[in-house]
Structures are given as structure tokens and as C-alpha cells.
Length: 111
Length: 112
Image (tube, each protein chain N blue to C red):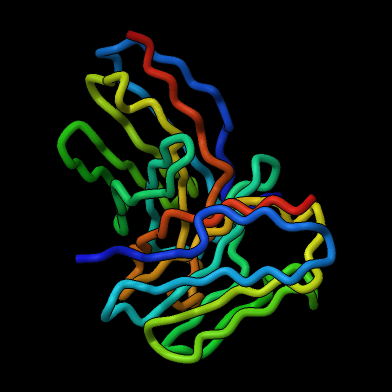
């Protein structure tokens, strides 16, 4: 079975540009999570969805970040405008119970 | 106080020894506890979960939970160089649906 799929795997962009990260969860999972990982702060939950509905977005840093889940098989995380401090690895994870399965991540570099 | 605390390490152990990784949490109502392993440049993968006080064994791994002390640990017996990774402790919040909070992770180095 395919695991969680994320694209792109690497993204390099200039400050001020819009960045869109994509995620396809494992089929049948009902929850989807977006995380950001940095050396200093570790793995931080940005937002999570249950049955396509955003449940908790308290981790979203500011209005520059937005996330959508239009259907059970697709989600996006958008950063507009991007800033150098947004540079990190962004993970998407999905779950049916409490055990979460992570995608390979998107390494974002904002110059 | 961080919700989930771990020593970032590195923790160095010789091959064949027991590695002991520790984690404390602040939410006394937490019900579920997880250990994830993350190799450098890779994504976290679940290796153990525990819900009840006491020990849970799976192969060379043992998870230990003490809710009264708000403490969870992971023991790795007969440590191998392939166990060298960062180990993340994660805690499910009481009433928090499927949301978990991760610790910073402990980097383990197994020396051949």
C-alpha cells in the first residue's frame, strides 16, 4: 500500500513568494496533520483535520499560513508571502486511530 | 514548562548495551504515549505505543509508563549501530482527539 505522499520533496524559493505544499494521506485514514520540524523547535503541529474539517489550527504561526483539505485524499499547506524563517522540513501525517504515519516531508528553503 | 520533555542528547552507548531513553510530560490527564524513531533526513516512524502503567515489550524494545510520576521511557536491549537515530516521545492530550505533542527527541549513538 502507498504511504503518505508529499510533494514537492524540496522547494527553494525567494522571500515574498507563495509556496504550496501538497499531501495525499493513506486511503481510509480520517485524520491529517501538518507539522513543521526545525532543529531549534523540534516537531511542531501546525494544524490537523478530522474528516476533512479543521479541528485545531492553534499551531499555525500567523496569517501567512493557510491549509485546506477539499476532500479525503488531498490537502495543501500554503505560505504567502514566504519568509526566511519559514525554512524547515514540513511533514504531513495521517491516521485512523492514534498512531500517525508520516510522509517523507518537504524541505523548504526560503532565501 | 514544555508539555513533553526529553534530553536532546546525544546519548552514546556501546554496541550490545541497553539504551535507556526518558520522557516526562505535564498533562496529568494524558492517556496514550508513543515512541517514534527518526533517522537523519527521514520521517518519523512509530515503533512503540503504551496506554497502561507498567511495561510493554516488543522484541528488543520495552516501553515503560508511570502515570503517577508522569514519566515514560524506552529501553533498547542489545543496542545495534542501526539503532542510531533520534527517538521522539509523543503524548496524546486528554480530550484532544487524535492530537499528540512531540518532545524534541533524544539522539542515540550506538558505538560499534
